[in-house]
Amino acid sequence: MRKLRKLAEYGQSFWLDDLSRDLIQSGELARRIADQDLRGITSNPAIFANSIGNSTAYDAQLRELAAAGRTTTAIYEALTTSDVRDACDLLRPVYDATDGVDGYVSLEVSPLLARDTEASIAEGRHLATLVDRPNLMIKIPGTVEGIPAVETLLADGINVNVTLLFSVERYQAVAEAWLRALERRHAAGLPLARVASVASFFVSRIDTLVDQLIDHRLRPDGSSPVTPSPAHLRGRIAIASAKLAYAGYRRMVGTERWQRLAEAGARPQRLLWASTGTKNPAYGDTLYVDTLIGPDTVNTMPLATAAAFGDHGKPARTLVRGVPDARRALRELKAAGIDLRYVTWQLENDGIQKFIEPYAKLLAGIEKKRSSAPA
Image (cartoon, rainbow, N blue to C red; front, side, top):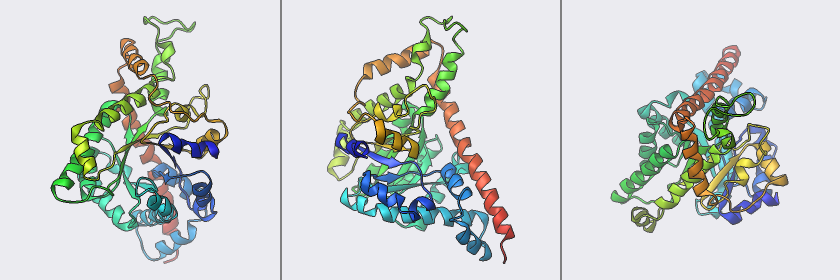
């Protein structure tokens, strides 16, 4: 617990990448807020599929909604927005105490809309109205189609968590959309201080795919036809990418353009490290926390990662270390014939699909229960 709380001393907020009715009703979420300095919650369709599909805590509300004739999608919205609203209320004291810096709960639009700008805008507005809490963040994938939706919702004054970012270049496009949205509000005479956003950069998935591509370039004896051998790059590219994204963030907040907005009350769009659970057992289970600690950032951890960091994590300001090494690692990866642009393109598409599949399975389960409920 002390180690999780210590993150705040280095300017990083600890958020939890999990949400369920059991977590709320058992009092565990309130305990974590009090004891671990938990400052936010992120959710996604896969999290809700697991929460709703593996708990009886939702059954009574589901039956009631089904009996009232609600559609499957409307039932899904009611179940998820109820949890998000309750979590927002539990985190409201954090939101107030930090003057709107933290205390947010993220709710994602349907993963089926990842390539649909206008539908993402409409659903983002709809969900914001349903939850009706100032500390809600609407999650929009940072696809090419999602970025205009991000800008529009932020210009509306709706907080946005831009999710599924895998490349430095796409992060920079998201940061540009954030600046444009603030400039639109400022030009219209609208307040900037309580419009919040995070850019969710996914880390462990980068190493999972890049490591596979590196292994394709190694012989059975460990040698490589590629010179120099890319073997030493395994487990390094995700962290290198994150460090370079953060270097871009630091350059952005040093510009006159940003300073004008800051003087008008704007706050930075923080980088949020997502997918921080280690996928490769050969790497330490706190790798993507220990190495990415720095000011104006968030780390959203699965329950297991939070427990591991609380037990044996290494709190220190590590994010600004080794930036030249990070640049060198990406150059060496390219020299080995691995184009990170294609890697991140595949990860984005895979990420969308990883949310579509559990979302579709959950809707099918809700429909089955809805159809069997008495009218």
